[in-house]
Length: 389
Image (cartoon, rainbow, N blue to C red; front, side):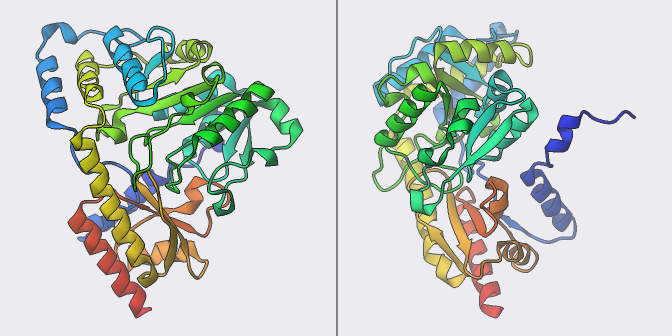
């Protein structure tokens, strides 16, 4: 068997694949483990979206290949969604590109713009695919300072000039995974202006755009002045409409960047099943409805229960304003041991902060996507274990 390409040595096994294997081993031994590590919605999509999929799947004309750019109707629906929700005008033919979920687009954007000597500016706390995409592409990584002191916003002033001159992409993600922080329009304007000054593509990863709490508004990076020329935003139905397994989203913004991204995508994948596009159109047509408000209320309630429990389970946290996570810090500073004991003794699995960047060693991430009764059980298990230490 030949040796794999050298680039594979730059990629660790995906952290949630490792966690999943441990959970499967424990389950085979009859151990019930509560998973609070992942962000896969536990609730279904709206009923009318499922019905639309079923109806469209019965259409005999929907079972062939679809266009690499998706269907005109889906692109138009995404453009209309941005117009209604964010007052952002998009040309559906040139400024909307369907994706197989945003994760695919993240890695393919790195392949589109990064090569040897090129730099990706990545927040030091962030979604792992920003880093893995850059490594696959053979680019260099500069981690941008981001912590509680910066309100979990990347400190653009900390980026050295020589690094900015080699940078091709700046990643931002709000509401943020894993911290739950949100961005303001003022921040997006500063990021757009920075990217324009240094000829960098601003990549706004925004799958949680509609999942906000405490009356916070949903904001798009494209709302900043003159944003489209230097910005691509990744929009997904996975979290906003509980359609994670459907793998449908879109990149929107810079026509030039999307044209280049399409060149990579069209050599690697094909369009979606047409019935999925039709279901996506139905979902986007029901913007800001009671269903979405109820979904956010459920997640906010779970957030509040976790925050209330933290003093009893040896953690301190940052109250999230959006997304599906609570970012916490081990009181004794030893997050690795905390995670191991939580799994092996309390039988609760949490996500390690190390998965999210070089400064995550003392952190632990909770997901808000376990059903209420399982979340309550997990918190009780953690309280009992921690009290007995």
